[in-house]
Amino acid sequence: MNLSGKLLIAMPGMGDPRFERSVVFLCAHSGDGAMGLIVNKPSPDLTFGQLLRQLDIPVPDDPARGIRVHFGGPVENVRGFVLHSSDYGGEGSTLKIDERFGMTATLDVLQAIALGDGPQSSLLALGYAGWGPGQLEDEILNNGWLTCDASPDLVFSGQDETKWSRALGTLGIDPQSLSAAAGRA
Image 1 (cartoon, rainbow, N blue to C red):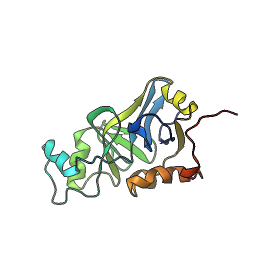
Image 2 (cartoon, rainbow, N blue to C red):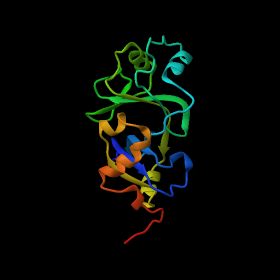
Image 3 (spheres, rainbow, N blue to C red):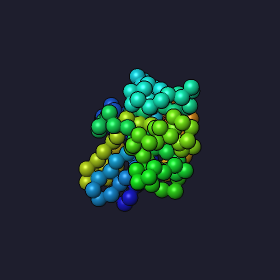
């Protein structure tokens, strides 16, 4: 099973408050483990303009440009990742996830965004979510996560606080019908 390019939707009763009501875009998934970015938890303390200043990148007149800095996950939470539309590709630095998404973790993408030459759609995350071999599969089997297809609209658009319920809606699930109890038939 390869879930690269899919979304993980945290189930109630996740047990880890960092992932409560999280939507995670899986950038990579293989027998070696998985890596993803939480796409619905904005950073309350850091703006895009502040980040550019910290990195000594010239700040444009309009540093916001709709770019939100997110908590990408608890691993390496000072390392930045830009999940973006596939129209951007840094020379040897972009992981092409599928025909719609790429991920770049180098300064060139931030510089391009600041200059207005970056990807059409992007989401900046500090830190990432990581799983060792078989760990994510076990969490899915133990009712920790649901999976669904990722769409650029769901990942890049709309309010962050609605992404969890919107992701569940793609599966035809009403969030109020979910239970934290696991079961098997």
